[in-house]
Amino acid sequence: MLCRTVFSVSLLALFASAGHAQVVYPDGTPVPESVQIRVGIEYGRAGEESLLLDLARPKVSADPLPCVVVIHGGAWRAGTRQVHLKDIGRLAERGYVAASVSYRFCPQHTFPAQIEDVKCAVRYLRANADTINLDPQRIGAVGFSAGAHLAMLLGVMDPADGLEGQGGWGDQSSKVQVVVAFAGPTALDAPDIPEVSKPLVRDFLGGTADEKADLYRKASPVTYVTKGDAPMLLFQGTNDPLVPYTQAYRMLEAMQAAGVEGRVEFLVGAGHGWGDPERERTFQAMFEFLDRYLKPAK
Image 1 (cartoon, helix red, strand yellow):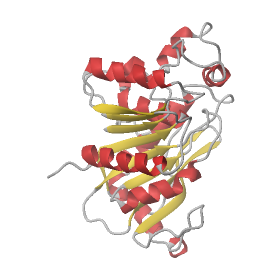
Image 2: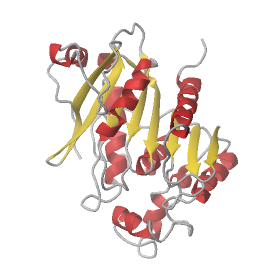
Image 3: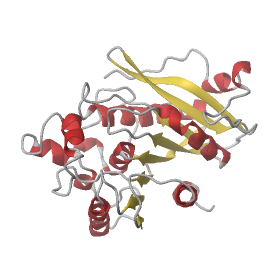
């Protein structure tokens, strides 16, 4: 996969373009005047496919800002980065640069295409840190469902694990400093994967667990957890039909064994995602967790 920058002018100049002064979120509410949003930025290419992200940031920022990468769900086969446009806007209101990223889908593109893409996005952001005015040492990842799986991989994988891909900016790290995961699978090779989810995982990995046991292990975040990995906050419903709560418990055990900081919150009776007021409560907890690790007290 080739990752390259395509800009002939700075991102900050694009942010300031007259055509982007008034932006409305998908729900119809206006973007706050304090926030700048740029959509459809190409962070790389995979063959003929353009890989895009949307970027939000405060209009005014003197010092380099921490950054959060937001990864949408959709069983690795569907979904859109635009669903999180308001989420990255809210992060920008809190003083973050925030990017919602697209990635290639299965079954046309099987693993590791998806993790290669989001790793490329992180490296792109670091390579353009000066232009975007972000701090490359303070990058976090937030993910939902399949996106949570990818976010956790960003927090635990190292270059030696061999899934960086052939993208650009090889001198940049793709590892993030903190992770928040909503209803994400952690151990794809575990016997607790529900029958309804097995075809989804099969399409993602290009075979069954019996056919590709090593690949199932290689695609599982719990495989890579070691001391010094990114702190993690996991939210998991106990009545999730797609990702059983035992998956979060497996990550809890791996984190505890390795001495990785963080916590796991189980939402009793919740399914694969939840609405307000729990959604807003868990988002506030997410903000506080990100602040703790990306905005340390000076």
